[in-house]
Length: 347
Image (cartoon, rainbow, N blue to C red; front, side, top):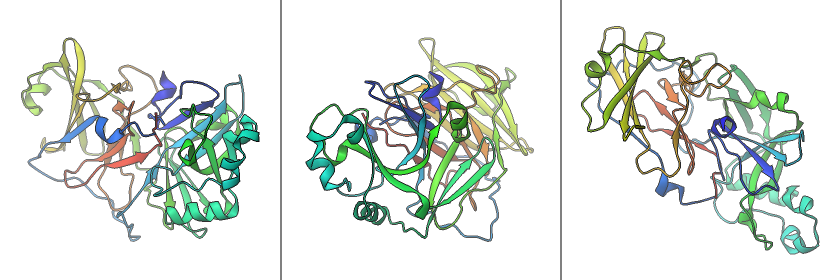
């Protein structure tokens, strides 16, 4: 179960079920219609710090991506690290014409994974508004490691979606993107845990400012002090710290099950500076992720906070495992929109 809850996904070829990420999955099961609800409420004071940077990042049409780990169903098989850009590609995906034309004469292995030819690679780059002069930036916020790879050095590839059952393949049968690494063992692939990716000509990530959120139980008075009344039954309350801010997390139950969690962020003047609600209402198969320090140890950390993007306020994420749709990164500022993580979550 834990491997289905990371900010990456694992896909095993020739299996009927797909293993997903952070929490991730694979097409379009109308994911806009079944998103887990994340709402924001107004705060009385806004003293959230924003990272200062001389390098200005354009956050219009800004896209970040998860990293997928793809392997065969064979035991101890090698793994490929892959980033799908199908979520943002507009139009018919550029699968080479000879693949579709000759699919009946090809073996399964030949059809399930191939490198794009030069015209198809060019069309893919044009469709996502990139050139070989741009780079891929992979930031491991858990390990604080940044990797930059020129796009000119990346193979453009296609992988058959594990949800494709038909023998008659079309362009939408494939996840298309870039191969980051091949022939990785499980221990090698660990470095891609807790990481996100960005394509562009500037590095948007702030380094060494993210922190795992280790929770502990909070006092019984916190719930009434910082959280407004709810029709749901109040459950346990937890707390953690980052810089001069204390985070409180309140459980709310319905029929004995946690259906909502509210987050309140308090500064060192005891003022509430941010509040968010994470709810399973209306979701299809979503669930709350374990809390580090309460439900799980350091081997399985999901919630992180801190300064992640240049010129932006702190972020927080990792509370809900999505079944449909992709996870998002939220800012501790009601004026900032969430950044969805493109994860090619199709069913």
